[in-house]
Image 1 (cartoon, rainbow, N blue to C red):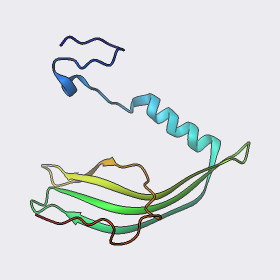
Image 2 (cartoon, rainbow, N blue to C red; image 1 turned 180 degrees about the vertical axis):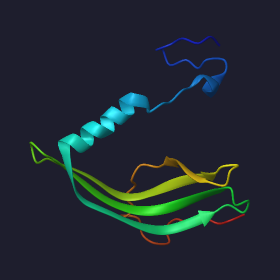
Image 3 (cartoon, helix red, strand yellow; image 1 turned 135 degrees about the vertical axis):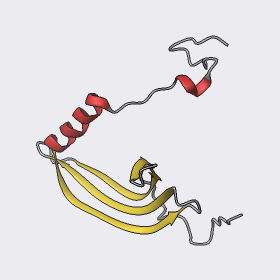
Image 4 (cartoon, rainbow, N blue to C red; image 1 turned 30 degrees about the vertical axis):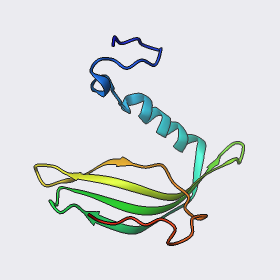
Length: 119
């Protein structure tokens, strides 16, 4: 299957051609957020930390409550929920943060309605 940019077809090498970069545009977006908003509360509570058996990867489950308030309009942008932060350990032994899920709200899920087991 040939690559067809903009039409949603998958190139022959699939995800190998994908690219993602925060770069200067991403840094500018974050700077714009900090310049245009006040960070009202910034609360974090680490709920769980799990390290892989190989001790080369880990995740942390964190409850967040972050309220951004626009400096001009007063409009609120509330980030609240549970995130999962993923870490990897480099060959040099340093832990590096590599990924985070978006904030998920589990407040309407009853305890015990979803079970996961280890194999």
